[in-house]
Amino acid sequence: MTLLKRIILIMMLSQLHTVNASNFLIYSVMQEVPMGDGTSPKKNYYVNIGKNQGTRIGSVLDVYRTITQSDPYETKKRYDYNVKIGELKIIHQDEEASIAIIKNFKDGDETPVLDVRNFMIGDVIKVSTN
Figure 1 (cartoon, rainbow, N blue to C red):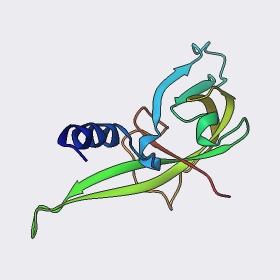
Figure 2: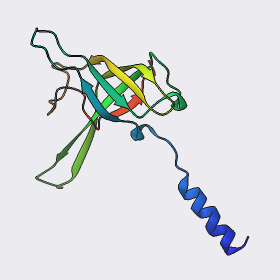
Figure 3: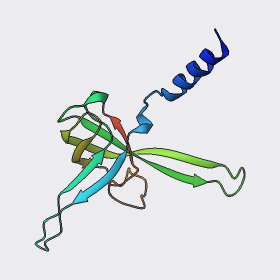
Figure 4: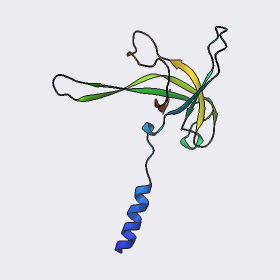
């Protein structure tokens, strides 16, 4: 194999990437304007996972938040905790993206303290296997 062919092959292979769950996340959130009537405004969560990744309308997506803490005493090491904070349900989808709504949000004694007590942009999405 000539050097040029090897370079082209390496360039082509570097363009390919495997899809893993950490690539999927909430990239936008839209909500109704609160009307002050005591009802909670509806929210839509826009996620970068769609039909091409094997989901369909009604699919349940697990939502994870990465909580980062540093050990200030011994090792000064940083720890990342990926904590499941709830589930979304797909209500509309295209090939590469979907719109989802809250199915449930974990909140209670068994849940770590979160800075934002709702789903937010950047939360990681994984397809639920339940």
